[in-house]
Length: 82
Image (cartoon, rainbow, N blue to C red):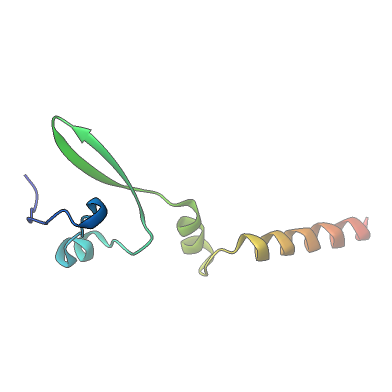
């Protein structure tokens, strides 16, 4: 069995992931987690957030509005050249 800590279920059934475990896993506020029941246990698994993956690839936060605007300008300029 991996590392374990005891936590309390809070208001609105919230559970706080202890700092030591967050740091070990590199969890950040806003990360997506999948929660499921397996053999009577709650299992939390990180879900790949496509916007965070894209942010890591391009090196800056992804903004759909900005990227869409840039793509539209690029398409219009490419169309004018032909």
